[in-house]
Image (tube, rainbow over all chains, first blue to last red):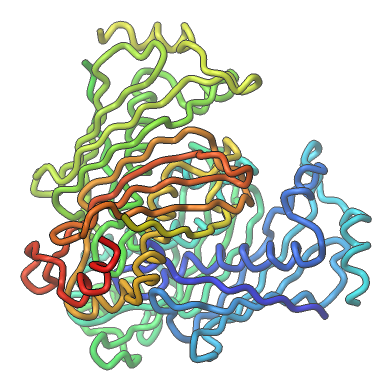
Length: 134
Length: 134
Length: 134
Length: 134
């Protein structure tokens, strides 16, 4: 299991008239966090795409417990529980400034060949970097 | 059971560099669709808020099957399967211009008193309008 | 001169904690409106891109007069004052449900060859459709 | 004159199908940068609102020179040229990772009393902090 933590501050434009972070922005926070996690492996999602592999999201789950406030510096934790051989299955936890768990979530991403648009295994250069944690 | 259909065209700014509708915009499409559904009851989500009731989202589920393209006119169907007495539990289906099912989803919203910020039952004026369908 | 009107309803996720449409969403409303205007010519922005021409925005001006409210059905008017031979120069006006002018704006877009990434003239198939209005 | 620099990484969801940062996201980057600038004064925009003053944007200008790429870490510079007594007039410059100027802009914000919704002078606690730079 490998976990990584990002810090994201809630922008004004991301709040809604209820005064909280709009529920539709959490998926983007997850994206920022998993991109940071991939960067921590010494990889970059951008390079993966440049090598001809795109990673569309197959499913998303979010459970909202406590609203996130404007200007709060949130901690977004991404955890990878198994070696991502055919899919990237990530659990998320978001904590507020009082370090309370305010949200949990999950995304499953596929590895897809950009030319054929068909699913494929994770590329070896990716697994090489990640394997050490499992 | 009550279903309602909205039509939403994918905006340029909602696509990402993969060329498809970004996965993080689907929750907003669900919001547009359920707001339209509430409007079809002769109610408006805005009026519900003005009466002191906010409806935060408790959970979100999205399963992405086929990507949505830029400029496509999508059909977003919201279905209410049970009378929403303490929560608003809605299933979504999105169809593309070829009428293929490209996405399914679900949201659960609570009824919350805006002053106390505590959960409460659906207000009677809301149930009155909705009850006829169940 | 050619003007076209689109109707856009303010989404919940587009409001901010001030309770109004967030100032950063107006450019996307302009985009929806100019895309509709191009569609009214019997063209589509998507097809223009498929023919190898992208149209990046060079400049944006927005003057905000009156805030737009959640759930308001806004009228967004796009006006083209000169034949767009080397750039697409569009003026915008947004009206609220009381038909008050709440915002004015302008965007200038270039025609760019997608392979060379260099500016070029508007393509003839585009000018052909638009010329009748000037 | 007082300038402040923020660093913002371009998110995947902020790119569009052209592969660049969507033009409509620059206003939000400006917002992040001016909020950081206000924070650098020992103030917070959130506190200003909590004291009953909202700061709606009156005008926005953006000139786009070079596109911003996905995953680039941009430097966003906000400059205040005059003491903001009745309006907050800020110039922006965005630089890419090669330190090239890719965008310039300006926003003018008003100080508005949240109850009366009427314009007012900047509050004294705000001017006190800012005056030292002019």
